[in-house]
Amino acid sequence: MKVLVIGSGAREHALCRSLSLDPAVTALHCAPGNAGIADVAELHQVDALDGAAVAALATGLGAELVVVGPEAPLVAGVADAVRAAGIPCFGPSKEAARLEGSKAFAKDVMAGAGVPTARSYVCTTPAEIDEALDAFGAPYVVKDDGLAAGKGVVVTDDVEQARAHALACGRVVIEEFLDGPEVSLFAVTDGETVVPLRPAQDFKRALDGDEGPNTGGMGAYSPLPWADPKLVDEVMATVLQPTVDELRRRGTPFSGLLYAGLAITSRGVRVIEFNARFGDPETQVVLARLETPLGGLLMASASGTLADLPPLRWSDDAAVTVVVASHNYPGTPRTGDPVEGLADIAAEDAPHAYVLHAGTRREGDAVVSAGGRVLSVTATGTDLAQARQRAYAAVSRIRLDGSQYRTDIAEKAATDEGAQA
Image 1 (cartoon, rainbow, N blue to C red):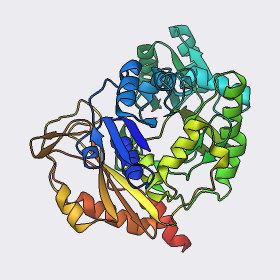
Image 2 (image 1 turned 90 degrees about the vertical axis):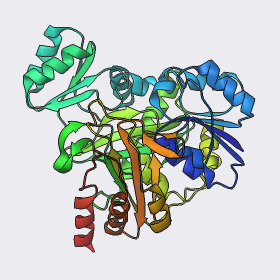
Image 3 (image 1 turned 180 degrees about the vertical axis):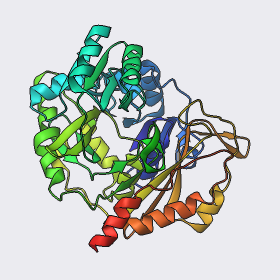
């Protein structure tokens, strides 16, 4: 099977790494890719938002499966263009991708499917904004209706900050605050059958102790030793399957990766948001634990044959990923700094720890930073404590001027795990 992956981040590097380990994948391409992906896939230049260009590239390469990584190409309809060219594609249609592309659309689907979520208002005027903020009170949760690369949400006790963000968004969803820990649960679907993956938890705030601004994610871990063993079954029954059924009923079947961002509240599980693609950095830890070959799983989704797939196989190991970000992230990041120490990790820490590139590019023989999140250092271990130790040992070998990372990824979960043992 010849596979083309679209995207250039650590999520796509994780996908490419897993696909490269699948014996059924005979050729692996990525567009546009990054410096790390180049080690496992042949890179090509393409405008990832141009469906015709992506379809033409896939056709020219003889690709038998296209995997669209990021949300923006999905919302732009790239998967539709690939399928129109007669090539199976992992990723939802433009219409179905509105589940991520519009918070208001997602709320409407959840209402139709009876999915538990926060009460909310969709606001377009200053008067509506003020009314919604007054109705819910602090802490205020304000979400840009459209795509914002994980940074369109403000949660604050400051009503003026909440109002300013809402006014800057144009169309906005204001909703009640959901208490309790957050969980990310991915499911692969072909529009009918839904196959859940293992849950993960990510860390959105930039600084230790969940301080600082929201980011695209500073790290993640799996499994969740504190979670109810029945959580996945419950979410399948109350969230994932009803949502897929509702979208099919509406004539916009969703095939690809359905990502449910969940809050485990005092009143039960509630959906915070849906995404229409693999999450970053949770993908890094979930795929580190998946033993079933990835190519066959994604092809079964793209070809409508998930019901025929044997149950997924998983490692009992734990996985932790720590994001190394550039100077000033999540503000305007500094780029062009040399990234050193990668060969040391390959020599000293493999196979239990490895580096997935996010924002990197090659300049001659050097790898330099090319984005806000530069690397996802991922490690596995028999438990979270060992996986953490291995991840941070590898992080310590990286030299990137001005870089930053959180030191507390999975710390509490590892402590809880040890207490249970």
